[in-house]
Image 1 (tube, one colour):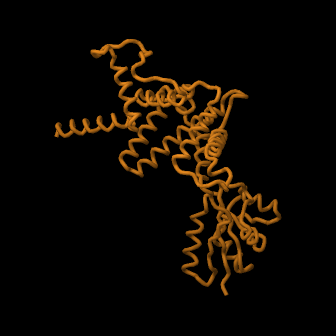
Image 2 (image 1 turned 180 degrees about the horizontal axis):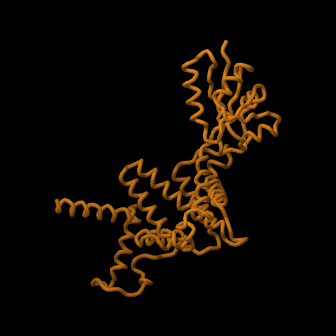
Image 3 (image 1 turned 120 degrees about the vertical axis):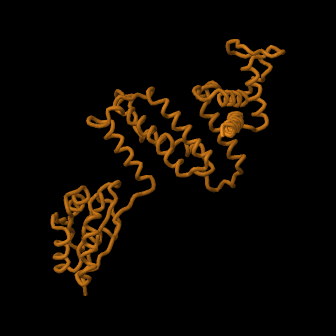
Length: 329
């Protein structure tokens, strides 16, 4: 009966030594070979499992299986694909030598590649990395965050899921880069990507008690969940002004809609009959209302009808854009 060569593959994104029970049984019962030292090999040695380092690869595996019957090859962080290919070709020519088996001692959990993004960004921002990224600040990067967000919305509007995946990657790049910049702040002010993720997790759990709270509670409607969400946000803003936290850099139409929504929630009347707070502008109508005041009233009217004024203006603008293109052709 031919022997057995087990290629043991593990995730480089998990702590070394974090293996399945079956993998531990495998390495404790059989000789283990590897092409070089690694954190995984060192973790096995600390647990009392000898790991033999060899530069002869396939030949040593064939020799070992002839002696021991079953032998384990501990793949390196990159998976040792060239060795697996060479071994497969050898056994295809000489099938009596051994059977080859692939075993996963650990595998990436969902989101594990985010660790790669953090590692790569750290390399880019560290000495010897990318000079451009090392020069950036939160302020210098602000415009790119806006650009990437708009490009993401464009991909959504175009129903282009491949482009959406790429654009979300660009947004993630901005998040990871900002977090890496923050690591270099003075002691007491610095924070990391883990602080960003931790704050997000806390917020999601806090704002979704219907999911993370008492499981015995009856199922809620979407409308009830939305109202609960808004109430939790109001509770979080307790002691703060109704306008605190509004993103002032957003487009004027969406800014107006957000101010109107917040004011209504706070019971403050901002109907269009009230005088505008901004500086006077040209274009007053017969009633003395400026262009800005009339725009404000239209946003107010759209909100009362459940219409997104920004999206509606965008729809009309894009229709006019196509009309121009048609005229040109």
